Length: 169
Image (cartoon, rainbow, N blue to C red):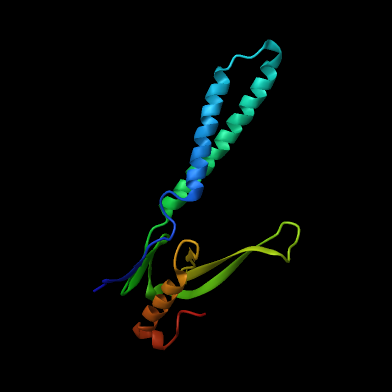
């Protein structure tokens, strides 16, 4: 029987601050583009109008792309469901017997001109399968400490876990 043990919902879903900002910016730029296109200018200023409209078009295009891809990222964040014999992640389903390794990875974003200065650190829970497929869960989106502790508990309960442990810290 493969009943659900725990469900870990994403921390950030729905209308996030970034999605709202990019969406509003896209709408404002689009309105500015339409209004600017309908404006009448003197003959001498027609080149400036065309240059500004082109700039507004590219800014609108970039903002619309950022809005779309931010929305797509929030849609792809699905709950992590842990069952007695397997778990579901946004990257698919993995059996506990197929897990080769599970570990934390610290991603450090450094300054552009000072390589020793760390600007931002993000911790990931990486779950490696035997077939070399990886599931990366970020601390920005999930409570990875609880997921890792429950994963470790479930893997240790497997019958073949007494021979070789699958998770390392």
